Image 1 (cartoon, rainbow, N blue to C red):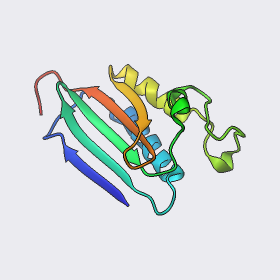
Image 2 (cartoon, helix red, strand yellow):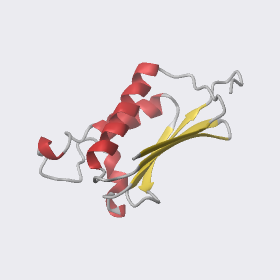
Image 3 (tube, helix red, strand yellow):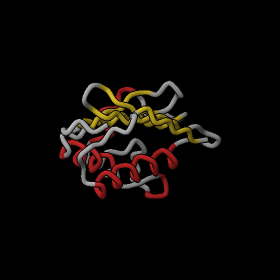
Length: 131
């Protein structure tokens, strides 16, 4: 089950749509790949001060808290065998982080209230005040 909620009230970010599309594709493919069936995925878009906040959370399994900071490291995989049948090569979230940082944004992970993982992305709003 996927739930999407938009609380951004027409907020606009100045960004490379292709690169952000790559980030969103990676995040949602990870959510689908690593959320047990039947599972739940929630995505919320909101405005926090002068930033757009996208939060994507899923139900179990999650990532152990000791490993959460590692998921943005290049080649890190929680499943250590690097067997592609169990996931990717471990570069997707590192690429996402680089793209978000290039947009002067921020990306972080934490345990989700649903029992899995939550990824938060902050991107600056367009400066002309568009919302």
